Image (cartoon, rainbow, N blue to C red; front, side, top):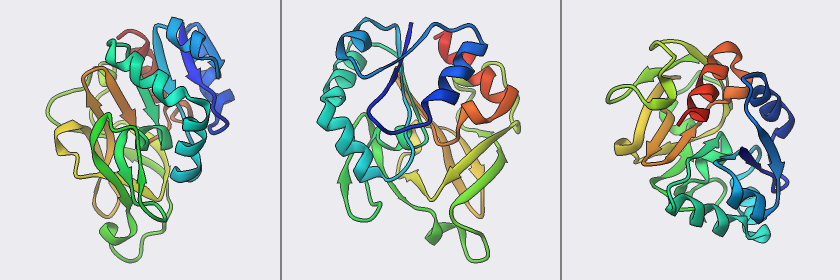
Length: 203
């Protein structure tokens, strides 16, 4: 069973539906016990970093996630959920993340150059880094996924598994051990996204 962490932030319905399409057993939950009894964890998130990490900590589920990851359980962070995997974010201040992956989250506006809109919204092809991640076992390089973001993970070269070009090469996904993250939304990325979720389910 895959536990989708419900802490008051995230597009849970579409994510649950997408996992259901590929036949995964899924439970949207705010229960520490359910998360502990799951085989894998998905951490979604939309909105502002500070608000999301605060809500996660208020539930106490941040510690549950850290404990389960330490046991080797696969964790997938999606969009803001991926950003929270990092040490800190500079989104409207400086805020500490879960610290599972080295690096920080910073605004993309200074690095993409003028003339491009922020947030970055739309479809971009994936450029694989350092071989192919297990999440991409069913994908070919260049297949497109859907992004909606104004901030991106930086200073994290050792964990980057794919980038996408939007005025600059932006971090699209990361991996460290049993911790995975996608800046894009697999649940909004059509058949390509379903292939990524299928690969995660098979880890």
